[in-house]
Length: 88
Image 1 (cartoon, helix red, strand yellow):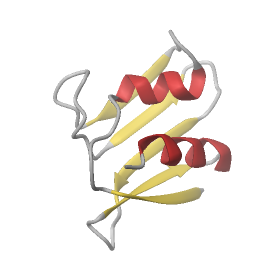
Image 2 (tube, rainbow, N blue to C red):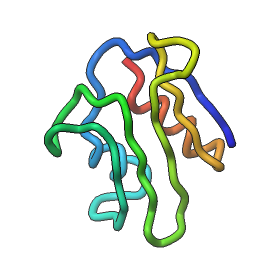
Image 3 (tube, helix red, strand yellow):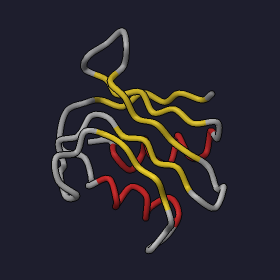
Image 4 (tube, rainbow, N blue to C red):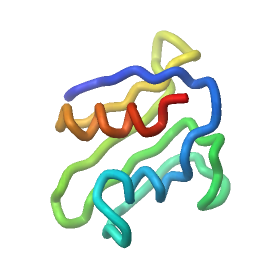
């Protein structure tokens, strides 16, 4: 599992924008997290799973540092792409 750390400061793109950034507009995903609405930019937990087997990514508060988010994926490329997209 690859882990990339991202500062919590600032707003993050809506979860669906993260999915589209990874897999394109209209991608078929399963998602989970703590967004209150589809356009919420204050989320701190997110799981995206591509239903066509193109990978998954998890974003959670860093267990040892509350000022960081941990972006995890079996794919280093997916983890880095999400981290760069959501970083403030």
